[in-house]
Image 1 (spheres, one colour):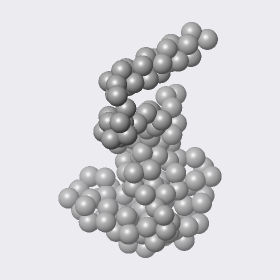
Image 2 (cartoon, rainbow, N blue to C red; image 1 turned 180 degrees about the horizontal axis):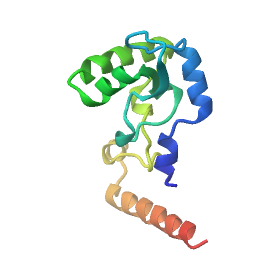
Image 3 (cartoon, rainbow, N blue to C red; image 1 turned 90 degrees about the vertical axis):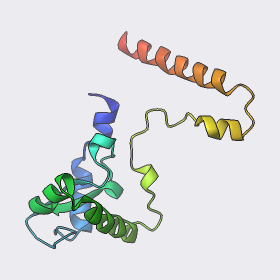
Image 4 (cartoon, rainbow, N blue to C red; image 1 turned 60 degrees about the horizontal axis):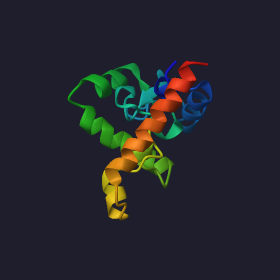
Length: 137
């Protein structure tokens, strides 16, 4: 299983906590026939399976959230709800980042790194070397 796939899955312990946090109801319509399995940032966009990214939705609201023009409206409701539950909720922390330790080109150049391109090249070479070592075990 890829690390990103595992990171985006929703562990049972997260489902239990979200189910309790959401009072066993859809956070959109209040239906009790709901499940804690909806990603605010979708798995297709590498949304993590963590409490801050998962909400309880009924089948109808989940379908509308995933596949309809209601998505922007539902997303704003869910965003407000998650912010109310987690005071330091930060949308940028809800996605899987393979190279989390690598700084962006702009961050590096702003810090005055003289040879940004070389730094990035060496960092990616190191990651590729580590990946090859993992596959040859």
